[in-house]
Image 1 (cartoon, rainbow over the protein chains, first blue to last red):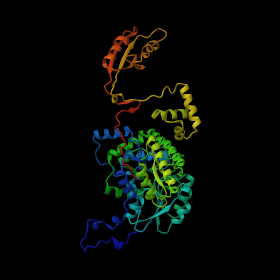
Image 2: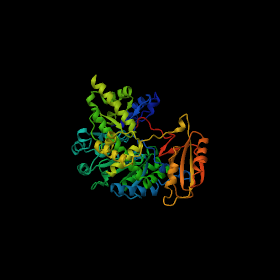
Image 3: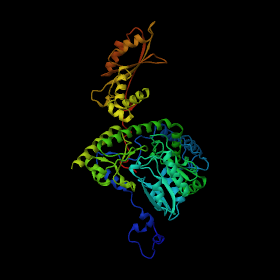
Image 4: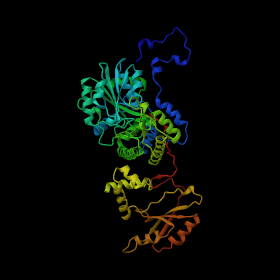
Length: 405
Length: 163
């Protein structure tokens, strides 16, 4: 946490370099661990990458075409701050149909610039300096830095392969202090592929209730659930008012570059987020909103086909890692496998770097995703079957070489 | 079994070289079931052939392809079948479809040169008694065939690493 006196910038002395002008909070945010690895990979040639956190499908043509048509007809204006009424209506319908949570499109749904903006808004709206924000880890890389930017204190809760990287009631309970205010959940999980079932959720919901926590539930991978339907945290008894569901179109509808997301929650919370949203971005881009509406209206079959295709590749990759001799818990959501590389004796960073240099395969070292990520490797299977097969062969040879030496 | 067969066909349609082992893993079923299903599909001629989709325009000895609309008089008792057979037995003929609408058969003919195809139409196809008329359209460029886009304009454009 940053102390208040550190936030005061001295005007008495002239600053020696441009970076001295930066706010202490901006300076304190660590650079993304993925960034360094990205530079390394970009400098290498002929690499098969399992490092991509987005679908390998291009946005379905009917969705792209809807956007092109809307541009042709001159739909280029601001929309309502919270998003077009049609899109909010469709999101409300979708949340109800798929996850059995009812939201009022007029007051409880906010269309954002990607799920990322929704997370930022929720944290900004809720955090006071010193508030503790509970984050099960390994997890998506942005929760802790944004929490810190708002003066909150991220508290990582380690999850383990032996629990299939699920959040357990015991570890949640052990991390709660009187300062705990928020819990950020991301299931299905990036990077572990872990999911939470209804039974897994119940004890968590009980603790949330007992400790009066607010939950930000990042459900961006909800549709990518491979053993039964996704259970939204908001659908649990008593949890709807305590939960801000964050989601978007990127993963399920292959629309990452469109930056279309949304938040659903209690009108008081959504309204506060809307205030920040209208001052910072006005509204999500109209062309993206048109495309998102088309995806929800006519894109469900194609979405399900894409999900089935990930599922087929998921089985292939899990079997591949097991055959190679890298222990891999079965990921039941998202499109990541998270095999353990501990048997090689290498750290995640070293393993990933050497895999890149010696086998020309890129994957993300698990340690960048926080506590409990060391000793693992995030491998995205949103890549063609032939590339996956080749990558698995190369990883197999590499691991064999290391274990022999 | 029917669902499994459909799933297998879809995977093979994407890539006919996929092994039963790979398909079994992807569909989470025993390999023996996949092997048996494929054998049945082959026996029943559901899987007719494992062929390669070729973009001949990238090969030096280029081919000329024409689509020909053919109007015919159906034969008593056999309808279009007999005439269709007389046409499709020629090796130059790549495909024959019975169509609804203004003409009866759509015939795809392939030759080495324009002259080849023209001579097939005038010497082989048109002289058939039942053939009333033909209209020949030469294909200038193939963009997409059997669901496969020939120009790979949608290459993977993703960043190599993203969170």
